[in-house]
Image 1 (spheres, rainbow, N blue to C red):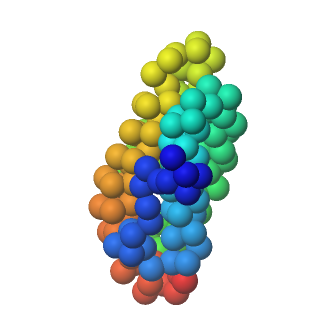
Image 2 (image 1 turned 45 degrees about the horizontal axis):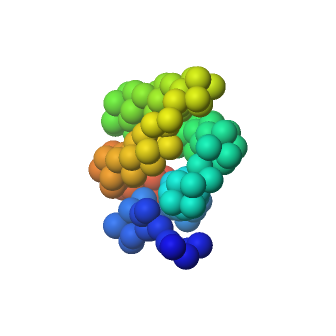
Length: 139
């Protein structure tokens, strides 16, 4: 395995039309791939704690930014979208609890959850706010 091998990659259809939000979504992909590379190398137990910390920071920064825009622009689907964000927040807390209990399945659970999140949330739910954000000048 080379150090550039990826579990998932950024694709243009993931774009939400905002450079900042797309950058943040790319950062999520970097986190996923970091978990994957550590797993393949057998180093995941050493890095999963710091990666979960990165995820926690990502959640605070990224979700807060989206949710501020939802309120500012009265995004029609904001309640449903925020529920999805809250489910993600809860999952990160659950991963942290699994980490503390030394659960051996944690790394695979994190990788699969994040990959599914990219597909289900970024490629579906986030696409719904593109027009609203663009109309309100988000770049």
